[in-house]
Length: 114
Image 1 (cartoon, one colour):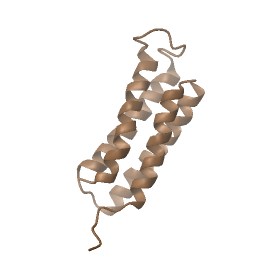
Image 2 (cartoon, rainbow, N blue to C red; image 1 turned 45 degrees about the vertical axis):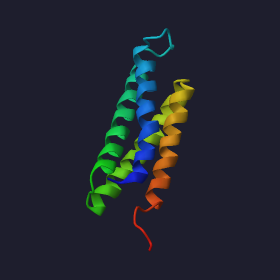
Image 3 (tube, rainbow, N blue to C red; image 1 turned 120 degrees about the vertical axis):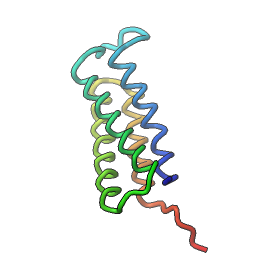
């Protein structure tokens, strides 16, 4: 279990909920409910959440971990931009937080120095 990635998983899961809320609009009209852009935002959040979950759950070879991490970074960044253009501020903020926490997780090690 790679603990630094668990912190990035929380805003990703919340972003998935926000994206599903924007796409399905169970609580009223969001203005983008059922659109292709909102559907792509859902796909982006699912992809980022799954990749972060895979990295956090099991130790992977270094090449796989870096590849999945970079793809998760890209998915989080592009989904944040999509949330901004869809005028879904919460989704954009959560995916930007996911992006930032993934950057932090890349540089924080789980190893003990002493």
